[in-house]
Image (cartoon, rainbow, N blue to C red; front, top):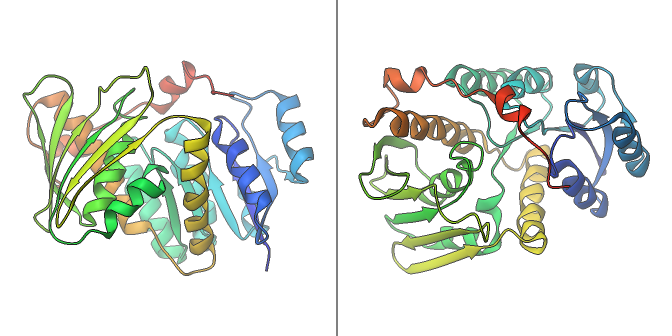
Length: 299
């Protein structure tokens, strides 16, 4: 069976890269596209649709009844909840690109829509799916994870945050801002695991570093090259296809990771420990539209 996938938003480099991989698979095709025009030109969108043989929609909600899976890929994370909800309500498995949302109420709205519609949910950062990072999850036992990222602590900070949440495999319980040099937090998880995440690594080589200490001590280093991106995008999209086919659901991990990212922002901003019950967490408002105003895609 070939699954028809709809792409919602062409803002970043992700839709192009993802579409190429989906088109190379024998079980998926890019069948539908919607774009707001906030970043891409009319000519770009038309050429994209023509290249992939996709139907262009003027209203993304109309796409919900015509696809087997949807991918919400807009850069403005404030649009993720309203764009994803019509698909989730119709029971359409949906991938929501990183970061999931910029406020807790939107995270909860996405989770509720997926639950009520019985739809599988996927998305977030692709970094946990890079083979060198994913292999660290095979080590058992309680663990301590150190992860270093770079760039904007929210938009790019989702990468190390999703890594530590995925490797520990448990919900977070507290975020503690660290006094060490740089922007760093400590995170505690329900199973007793712990992590330290630093967000201001060097952007010069655009790389991420992970140290996992459990039954074994191992490391992973992922550079921001096109080759390394492709190595993580492949399994990331394979996991989404598993969601489309009902063999997998990333909802719990994705939603908890999204709230953890908001807690990290609250902890760095306030200098105080943040828990899931903290008023500071519910008060986080990250402006995706403002980020989009200064955004330009890699290609």
